Every structure is written in C-alpha cells, then in structure tokens.
Length: 365
View 1 (cartoon, one colour):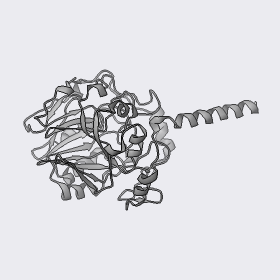
View 2 (cartoon, rainbow, N blue to C red):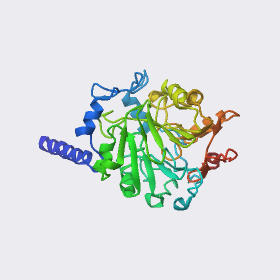
View 3 (tube, rainbow, N blue to C red):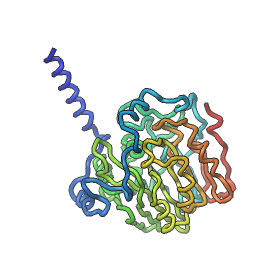
View 4 (cartoon, rainbow, N blue to C red):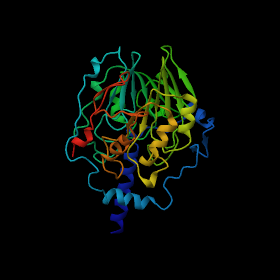
C-alpha cells in the first residue's frame, strides 16, 4: 500500500511538472529584459507593485471559501442557457477610411483608427484557461478565429493572464502582426512563442512610444496583478493611452478602482472613448476588479464622453449573473455619458454619435 501511494504521488508530481512546462505557460523574464524590470521604480521585493496597497482578497474572505463557492455554489444564470445574439462581420473587408471597432466578447476587440488596425487582448479560442474545458466560452460566442482577422498593425496586450493573453490565438496570429505593445516582461512570452524581438515594444508605466505613422501609445497604471503560473507579478499589468491624430482612446485593461483613474483622466484626457472593465467582479476581490457601484466614479474620473464596457459577454469567471454587468452599467447612460453596448461582431462606428444599440442581453436566456 505504501509503495502504491508513493508511486501515485510520484506520478502526480511528474504529470504536474510536465503540465507546467507546456508552452502556453510562457516564460519568466530573463537577461536584458529582467535587468530592465529590476530598474523599474514600480518593481520592489521581487515583484511589480500596485500604486496603492492591494490585498489579494477583501478582509473577511479566504481563498478556500472563495474556491468552494466558485466550484460548488454557482448561482443560476451565471451563463446563458442558449446562444446569445452575435453578428459575423467580414473583418478583412472593413473600410480603412472609417474609424471602427469590433468587440469579440470579454476584453478582445479590433479597431481601425486613421487607417491603422489595432487588436487588443485577443482571446479567440473557446477557453480562458490552460486546463481544457475549465473556462469554456458561452455558446455561440467563439465565431471568430485568427483567420478572420486582417493584417494587424498594432497588437496591444494589457497583461499576461490567460483570459487576455491566449496562447492558441497568439500562435495563430504570427505573421499577421507588425508590432506588439505590452508591459515590461510580457515580451518574454511572445518571444518564446516565436515573435521577433524587434517587433515587441515593452513599456513601463508612464513610458510612451511613438511610431512614424503618428500613433503614440503610453502605458499607464492599472490596479491588478499578473502571472501565468503560481508566481505573481513578474510582468507588468497596464492600461494604455492611445493617440492617433486628434483621437484619444483609453484602454483600461483589468483594474480595481483607485486614484489612477483620476490621474490618467486629468493628465491625458479628455478621451473620445474609454474602454473599461465591467464584469467578472466580486466583493471578495474588489481591489483588483471594479464593482458596479464604483463605475460612476470611474467614468467621472477618466473624463470620457463615450464608454465601451468590456470583460463580459463570453466567459463566466465570477459568480454574478452573466447579464448583470450590462444591466447595471446601462443605467448610467445620460446626456453626459454615452454607454456603447454593441453585440459581439457588430460594427461600432467611432465617429457616429447617433449610432444606437439594442439591449441584446435582454433577448437571451
């Protein structure tokens, strides 16, 4: 019996070792990339630090209880029962003469701005986890693949979590991407997966890069964390300010509420569009994901007329109803704030202030 137990434990250890060395887990920063990280003022005690103290969980919660709730106490309506209404758009034939945006669900979207294509956090596979089948997309939401995308001028990665940096999608995009923009250290994953180092630009918070076509991208803070293994915050998690011509867009990434929203809105705003995390929140992890009750403050702080809420509509990574994020944020629409709620795949016309959207989530069960 003892021999059997020992062999079983050894087998589990070897399987775990094999599993954690699969390519989708990426690589930790090394060499010159690591040296740049060590020089960052935001890196201390072996990891990147948030601007404010950011506990993993709210006081009164523990990881065991959170895990039990997620595994065994999932409420009804955490996922839609049927396919949600989506639209299949011919992405390769979108006009480069118009400023457009296509949302793919969760935090993945493509936009065309002044003739250039930008792709943010593309997760076009059917799973938001390295464990097959553990975080499957809602029915009908995985209708786009990398093959559907046009050539990409700028691939922007906010951070390296699996629901934002998807190995299968990134692998399939090789050859279509001209330039990658990401936070410090994230480029190690991309280079490991075959992207040329010359085409990867890694930024620290408040660093900017400007390209010959007039596109200027600045990395700005987010209140979150990073990591594809058990080791946290070895790479930087970012939001971004994107400027092209007279247009300014804020790409929020994942973030809990904090003072950085006000600082970014004051320094870089006003924005024509702010793309904000809205979904997969929980009181237990309020420091790293914005709650619905905090969205009015975020919208006021960031100083944008148009708000595109993302981080919902495709994956159930929290315990709220799948409709709740959109049901709650649409209540904030008023004469001062325009909430944009396109369907997955619907063309959002960035220069058309009269475009309206249906409450499509109310049509689904």
